[in-house]
Image 1: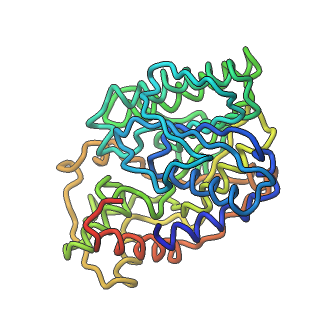
Image 2 (image 1 turned 30 degrees about the vertical axis):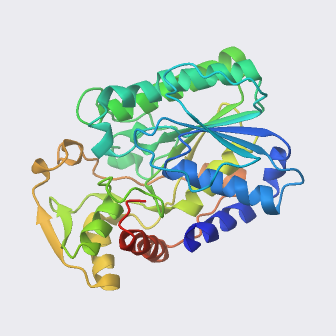
Length: 355
């Protein structure tokens, strides 16, 4: 396994080791385990099993491989995998104590190809996982949502708090992903209120890092792929859209802090609140670090979810809630995160792989 991945798993596990004792000897089910987020979660749980927990937890991962590629961890006594589409009910004979619902099709390249499946995993899949949580009487469940539920926030709502209701189009090139996450949240809160399911919601803001598919067309994989293939990195439109970028260790640490808490029925933004930087600003960092060249493109000729009419102008979270209640502080600065991602990407690219 890649050294950077192993370092990252250790970093996250050490940050949550006290809260993680809740998992000792228990069974954790993860959906989307073969994807970017899922593989990190599994890697962290494996590290906890080998180094921190008094008794190892049992890990069950579920994935249908629409956008997930492979597992970083081989099956063993405490880890097994199930190939299954969660839009169909999932039958598990053994006890399940915790559920991390991380399944989803998050890249516009894929959710534009799998329009209906994206809606199904966010809506029907979430309902099925909540039903499983109800059947198994789980101790905690977390639903991984997205800053996409906020749509294109009004400037007065930047940084964006959890209370912001959103400015989202229910039709259009991003709608199948955005609305699926919104209805998944609605299901989660309805089950919490109706059946007292101990579910929490995490809204991720632009989490990136090793393990992303290099062919998934999101910003940093796209920049990395072009650079590693000797091509100028592409900037679409004028590059003035702004984002904050959260390195994966900070993202998964935030997710697991929420998951292992008792803040049932609540929503938490997870990401970093600084710097809010333009796409062109990221290109300038790449140029500084890797001597890349930049090429501007017409946004209307690329994936329609990135077009000027669809791409949100700004994204920046208000993370004061998770800081105050769960002792969360992002630690990885942007340049360090990009360098870790690029070191991993160079290694994967040299092997002729996508992940």
